[in-house]
Length: 375
Figure (cartoon, one colour):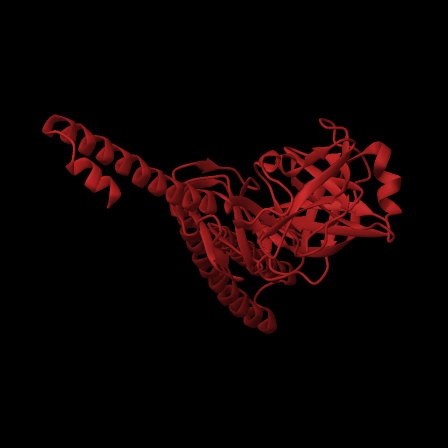
């Protein structure tokens, strides 16, 4: 009020200038209040940072040597035709489930059918000759009994009958062989299983015995790995073998050595080893990529984490662990390196959620929001 009375006493021109000064001052004060409020709100939002995380799962592998491998069937049948010919039909695809007796492929049966028809005609001709020889033998047997012919003449007709009988047997055998070959034009599955390989297509001419389809029989599943010669004995003495799967990070299966190749592969100079899987889960499929970890019974579980998750503080590697939405820096003990990953031997527990990106921009006790997958 005092300011207003003071302004009222001023001349007109000075009054205008005074009002302008008061308006500017009021605007500055109001803007400062709004900016301070906005700045405090922005600072409160920035305090809660969104981070990328991962959860330590139950699939920590044992520390030791790791070999990559592939899930295979214990029994694999490489099927081929028993006769040569041109493929006419293919009834299966890769991954098709087949049962015993199912027709997988067929070759052109026309030539084989002609052989069967020819053999059938030979059988009919031989049987006709046999009937004639049998009739002659019966007539000359009666003549021999009456003494009209000699014994030598009768023996000739007996021999003719036996020859005709042998010809019938020969023709029948050829007919049976031709019928079998006609049936061989159909490639059938001998055991139930899954088609894992097809190496011939319709229109292709294949030879007898050439592999055209591979069927993995139902039953046991194994992992095939390649082991250097200097680790074969160590593998034989392994106290524990653990198998993990790239596509199923939460699945771990125990394994046992079933077979070690007696000699090294000529190209890679490594030994093929088959690992039998114990208590195989249903989600394990043929062809999956597997990791076989060989260790002893005293080996502690560990896990592979991204290199970007490691916060190097002096000589001690650490990781940010989120507990109740708050960051805590935890020291870890590391092992070997992988492809963009590092092995954590100790310091992390199952269920720990760690930050895997931007770790050098964070601070102890900071509130965060998170998201991510299991390791």
